[in-house]
Amino acid sequence: HALLNVSPKMTEDETHTSEKLADDDIDSTPRTVIIKKNEKGFGFNVRGQVAEGGTLKPIGGQLYGPMQHISAILENGPADEAGVVIGDRILEVNDFPVEGSNHKAVVDLIRKSGDELKLVLVSVNRKEAQVLEQEVERQHASTRDHFERRSLPLSIPDTRQVVKDGEKYTVYNIYMASKLLTSRRYSEFDALDKKLKEEFDEFQFPKLPRKWPFSLSESQIDTRRRGLENYLEKACSARIIVEGDTMRDFLELKKNEEAEKGGAAKKKEALDLDVELPVLMADKSTVSVRVQRDSPANTVAKAVADKIGLSKENCQYFSLFEICSHGFERKLRPGEFPHRVYIKNYSSAGKSCIAFRKWIFTLTHEVIASENKTAANLFYWQAVEDVSTGKIDPGDHLKQLKVYQKSSNTKAEYLDLARTLPDYCSVSFPHCACDARKQGHVIVSVSLNHIKLQACTTEGILEEQVHTFPWEMIKTCEADLEETAFCFQYEKKSKERWVRVFSDYYEYMNECVGRVLEEIKWKEKDATLPVSSSSSSKSKASKPSKRKPIKYEDDGEDL
Image: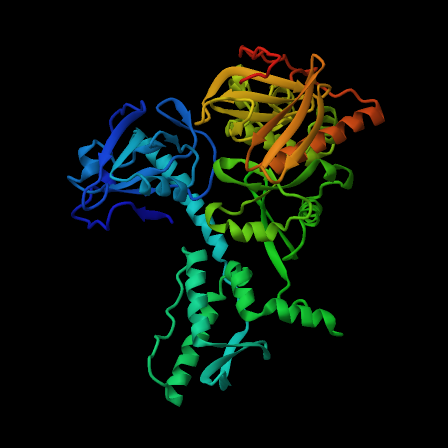
């Protein structure tokens, strides 16, 4: 939602307005406030981006990811008395970092707070607030794409009486383009309405004709028929709703499609087999491809590659990804259906949750692929995105990277420098539990050289210990479905040991390992030595990490 009341609805007289945001210099140092709920709630409203992640923006000289902000405050309410100011950005909720989180995630955390809420806030001045608000408005506008209007020739021209198991009732015959799709009774429309409102809570559904406890006359049945026809027409005017499984099951479209396939005339257009799927590119643009609803990820990726003019030999270096919570991007498996993923996550991701990203760990192959202009442009914009969102730590090179980014003539120089950074051509996963740690979590990174475990707290705050496992040390890797864990066995000092990482993305970890091993075979096949991700012929290497590696113990290490 663009605006969601954390407290009960506040009148204009009760709330402060945005005009009370100070124009003077404001101390933007993060501050902690404790808000105690009363009978009217916490006394403030929250507004902000509906998607995860985003570009870093300056506030008081510091760079922050997008944050939800206070849009209204109940005068003399709990938030007002705690010192909360309109425009304040929310950095943490009850010690949980929410920088870059979407609106729903932050509001859910606030609602689970009980009677006391702890917030870490960052104040902004009017100029900064206007810049940040424009960014939020652009994203809210993009969510309207989900409810793109369309015309579907649905109608309910007549009804019929049914007697079943001793019960007599009326069913309403639903047609599409003069073809009977199915017949449904009123109770089924009522169940459909409830389910759709749960799935698409941002859409304004029309009202169903009201229930009636007594038998209906013919004129009343006809009035209800027209009301149901109007409901169906308006609900199906949104492309994403009619393409969803709930509406398709209700209209029995799949059953009709299968019948058509078995017939002589396979009129896919009449049954709307094809869908328009928006795919995000690293430069923030969207490429829409028309594919079948159940097209697998590799087919959709090829359609995107064809549309943007990516050469056939370079398609192997790119794939489709799902934008998950906190901006993490998970590669879709070849057999997954991107449109189903898109429908499932439509309300939590701006224009789309499906992205076209690079899928390569070997730097030399990326450099060779960059000879193609389209591929080079994709690599460049992903590097820019990864640096701006913190997926790649620029270290001391941030200023120079920004200089290169300002000119379209220095894209190659930007890439050359970015490729010297330690995290380039690697995948780092969200922090998770690991049996190699007695306390805390780990951040798993996979690269062409090794698997790395970076110690961190259960909140994801980095600690000093780091342990790397070169591929020569690793004996085997697997995804454990029962334990939902990525497991690998390594050998050191003639001793073998298993490590288990318990992550929601354990299958993707295993797929990354499989890809790396495949690329190592490329090296053996073409005798090409991979370029180190920490060196380049055109740029100086970044400084070595000062983090202290963990000491290895024969009886097992604890990160």
